Length: 147
Image 1: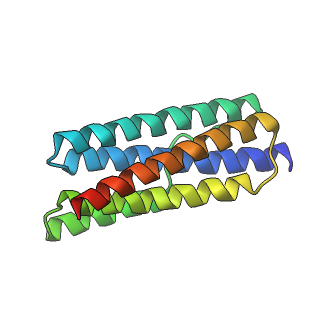
Image 2: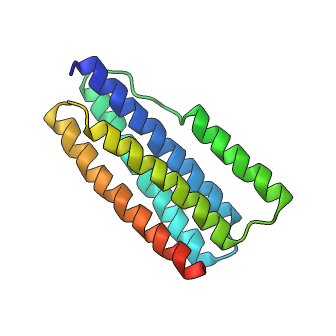
């Protein structure tokens, strides 16, 4: 894989991480549960740290790091806002949307890991992928506890 292609893959993951950060912050605003709010804020912070780490790696590879989230992430948050204006959001619905976002993040990381990239980048992506899976499972378990 060329360095340019690796930078593109990492920039895609930066967008995914930024989307996750914004999504979790939105969920923290929407929940009525202080415990869930804390979970969501911790997840948002983790996403922010992941994005920064990826941005640093893109810069180290000589690229220009992505700064924002994706259009699809913004559309998803807009859809959540629209649904919540029609029907009040309960914690189960919020957790279901979070899990949907984490499913997307898992898929994006798995796609990235199928690509060839420098060893330092692969190490970062593998570690972050494990974090995404752990976070997904935590959200899934919380969702199940609200059913």
